Length: 161
Image (cartoon, rainbow, N blue to C red):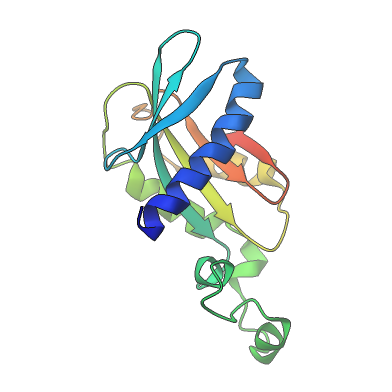
């Protein structure tokens, strides 16, 4: 697998574990595909669940830094920016909004969930962020019939939009 597929696979495995607990299901990741990214199957029912994976970050280069390819999250780098970290004042909302908005342009058919893996060094109040996203995004046409989900690995939770 290439790195992008490894990230999507790891995201799907984390998400499915939490999704199964929430829905009392037994989905397993069975295949890395292209569009959508992941195919899952429920061991008990045989039903499929397809996942489109995207990443969201608080600041530019947070994702790259989490992969160890940048020192953008280093405290000395952040401190040297001397107040230029303005996106932290609004949290992950804007980048998450733009990422989801772009994904709402694509229709992958039935049994599909959008999973937004949020990469952050901060635990945000996602209930407030989700409330703002619901008000701002046009969700009148349910393209992702299995929901739009935020995966917050830092606190091991999923949130449904």
